[in-house]
Image (tube, rainbow, N blue to C red; front, side, top):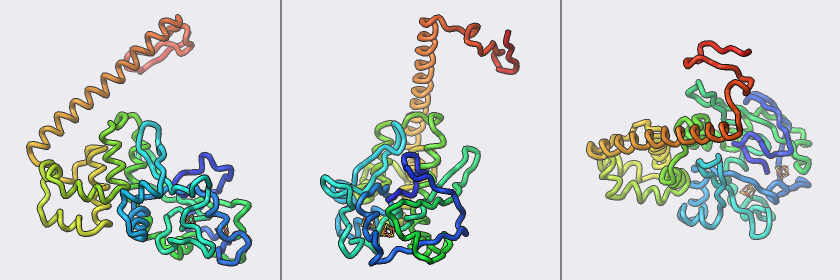
Length: 316
Ligand code: SF4
Ligand code: SF4
């Protein structure tokens, strides 16, 4: 089963991009010859909301769910981690697959709901909103494409309960896209930031304890009523966790800090900026040194020479 959020970099299938009003021919139903084929070989990334639904369905904590049912993976190099459903021991099938179908059907993940449509979230660097587009994945084993039922992608999404899933994961997708498109301009996140990202994104029960803690109260100026409200409901808490992450990762302050903590944060942010600039200068010096060692200079580089401000360049 293909995953929805990642624009098919490793997939052997190259889907066509379409809009929501595009009509597909597809139906999946018990009794079809390929029943469960898609769940026998899984590669399913989970959103934070998927985890909230699944851990509730299984009656376990998010920490237990992450430990027993998922594997982490690198969403981007030296950056944020994602989590995927862990298949059965020594196999590729989903652990929730039953002869009669999905064992967690009412709370199945976003990727399973979307299939054979794939959601593509994109954001250009000069834009502040993400664009939603879709792709249709056609795999040989899936016979659902041969069933004569026509439906638009938008109606298929509604049928599969996806508007709610997409809405409740939107804040997280936006911050992941923003992080990916910011790239090196905000530097490599520290280990602490990466750990906070993992906890706030996926381990909602540990994040719950963190928001309840003394350490959190010392740092953030929230009233008891505000805190009680977000702690009463995992979905509210999840939306708060996305705001929290935007503040931690991008300095977008939407949660007021206590005065003393604000001063400390500012100092630490300044120190981090100095560190990023120092690392960049070191890398540049190392590169210059290597180039000098190789006897490589601007004149023989074929790139010509530019003014300091880059206003004019000339080649021999
Ligand atoms: S969660 Fe359900 S639908 Fe998704 S792969 Fe597993 S068994 Fe299939
Ligand atoms: S029709 Fe496609 S989605 Fe449905 S069971 Fe078969 S392989 Fe899976």
